[in-house]
Amino acid sequence: MQIHYAVPKTDQNLDIAESMSYAWRAKSRQTGQPFENQKLQPAEIARLKRENAQLKDEVTFLRKAAVCIAKQPKYQDQMKATFL
Image (cartoon, rainbow, N blue to C red):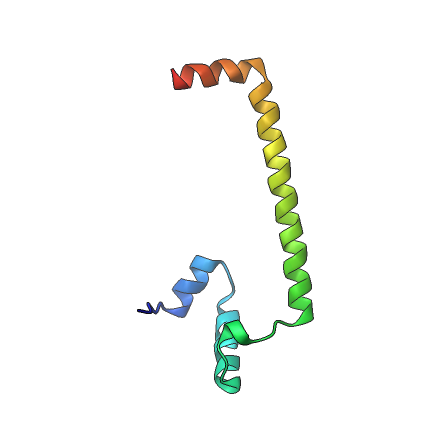
């Protein structure tokens, strides 16, 4: 069973530009291939790789920050009080 959503709502949920969805749909209709089978442009692939690397760096930083904060005695006491 497939569930179909309106393009604007889907784009909002996926945090992408509405025009991108319409372009994918138009290309799919032209080529007769679903989006999953279409090739991404090299520039788009490069952009996605850069974004992925940046997000990985941010996650690493936040994990290290959380460890540092958790090690501080002030926060350890608060954590103990919270979970008792």
